Every structure is written in C-alpha cells, then in structure tokens.
Image 1: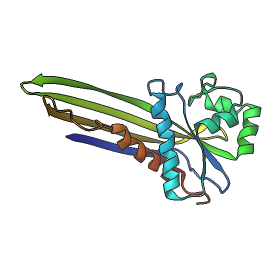
Image 2 (image 1 turned 90 degrees about the vertical axis):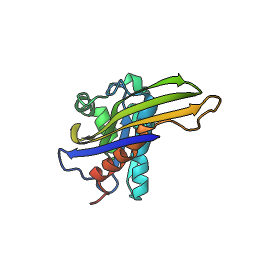
Image 3 (image 1 turned 90 degrees about the horizontal axis):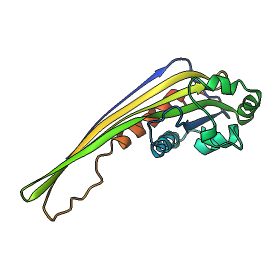
Image 4 (image 1 turned 30 degrees about the vertical axis):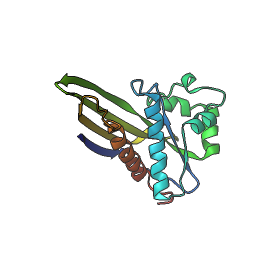
Length: 200
C-alpha cells in the first residue's frame, strides 16, 4: 500500500510580468540548498521547464547549464556562489549586468529544498515486511534580475509511505514510495502560474 499527501502554496512579493522576447532562467544551487541531492535539484529545473511546455507559451527557459555558461563563462557551478543574499551583488557587477541585458534575461528562478526518509523492516513466520517513508519540501524563489531582489516564492511538499508484506521466497514488485514526484510537478505548475504568459 502506498500513501502520499502533497501540498503547494505560493506568495508574490511584487508584480511579476514577462514581456515578449524576455527569458527566464531556472537553476539549482548547492550553495543555497546544501542538503538537497544534485539529482533532485536538476529534476526540479526540469519540472519548471516541463510546466512551461505543457502550457504551450512562447516563453524561453534557460536551464541550469545555459544560465551558468551565459552568465559565468569559464567557471563551474562550484566556483560561483549563488544564494539569495549574493544575487544583488552578482547582478550589480558590470560584466554580469551586460550579459543579463544581452540575453534579455528578466527573472531567475532558484530552486532548492530538502528531502528526508528511511525504511524499516522485519521478519515474521513465513513472511517479511518493509515500511518505507519519504518526505520532501521543495521551494522556488523568483528573483527580478534588474536588482536581484525576490519577487515571489513557491513552496511544495509531500510525504509518502509504503508498507509491503511478502511471503518467504516471493520478491515484491514495485518502485517504492516517490514523494518527490508528487511535489515536483505541482511546484513547476505554480512557478509558471506566478510568472504568467509573456505579454499578459
């Protein structure tokens, strides 16, 4: 049996509008979310991109590698400290400001969060059991790159558990509990709703 609960919320701190021809960057920074696995951070970037594609909007998303390559050429992600409190300093630098304007990059979505989970198991006569659990709390902050200030944020969380009992000699089939999938898709959808269609 698998049970998953999910929740999502968003908060706009200022008006968010994307003009036609402007782009939005989405990236995961391990400096901002050191407890999150890099693979999950990359999945969150894909969830935002997928949400835009499902909407069919003419909004160009610059994903992780493209943002780093365009704004910080010659540097690796580990060499660039990107956190909410460092963004205003980064975008104030003349060479980065020039690159942002040349790219028509209006907003940057910084994704992160944390995940926790574990599993317990045991054996009773003729059978074995496993109880697995997972909790994820994902977040996305939208920053206006004119000043590097936060314009809005989205929170998405999910908790799931799975209890499996198998007879001795029988291998249960299943992929386990996936709370990440229950939280990531809604997070991307809420980010896209917050940004809106170009020209709206």
